[in-house]
Amino acid sequence: MGFCFSSKPIDIRNIFKCLEEGWGRLKVTAIIGNTQWQTAIWFDTKQDTYLLPLKAAVRKKECIELNKPLQVIVCV
Image 1: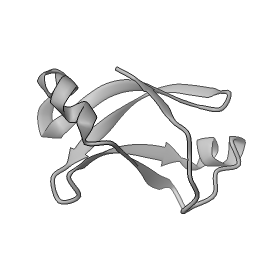
Image 2: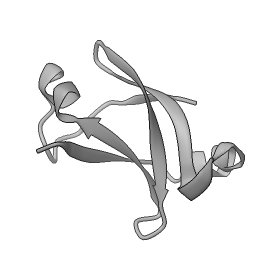
Image 3: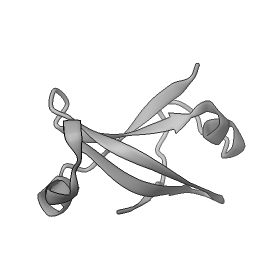
Image 4: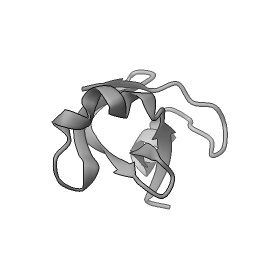
């Protein structure tokens, strides 16, 4: 499985919408455990939330299980 997605709170859109690029894309630095990487989150209008893509390499390195709570730090 290549990518899974973590949804982010809608509240952040009220603050950072002005920084979005095309298609609701917002450049961020994501941190999970000891793993930090440059990526982007996208606003999904159907789910009314930002989505953070989680690569298989990150999920494996940080032992992330699907459908389990996950602590993610997102820096804009």
